Amino acid sequence: MEIKPLGDRIVVKVLEAETKSKGGILLPDTAKEKPQEAKVVAVGKGKLLDNGTMATPEVKVGDKVIFGKYSGNEITTKEGEDLLILREEDILAIIK
Image 1: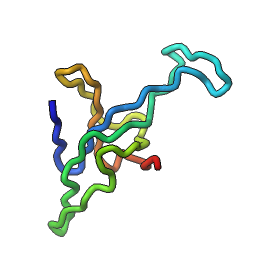
Image 2: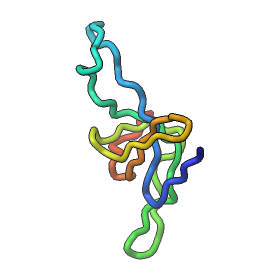
Image 3: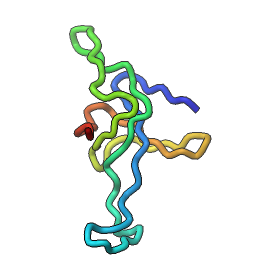
């Protein structure tokens, strides 16, 4: 299924949380932090500004991004893929 986000919305696939701590200890599911990194899979046209122009998004498909911990809306596609729909303002940084 192809998803085309509207306006300044962006569809991302959340990357898996770490299963080990930095010291090498295996973490149970209850101790894992909610992941905040994702890969962009679709981008809307951009945000409509007050003056009538369209601000193009800074992110593009394929970018790895960091987003706010409790941002966006989770969806599951017919194929069983878990995705997250965010507004561009919920994205904090692009990972280079």
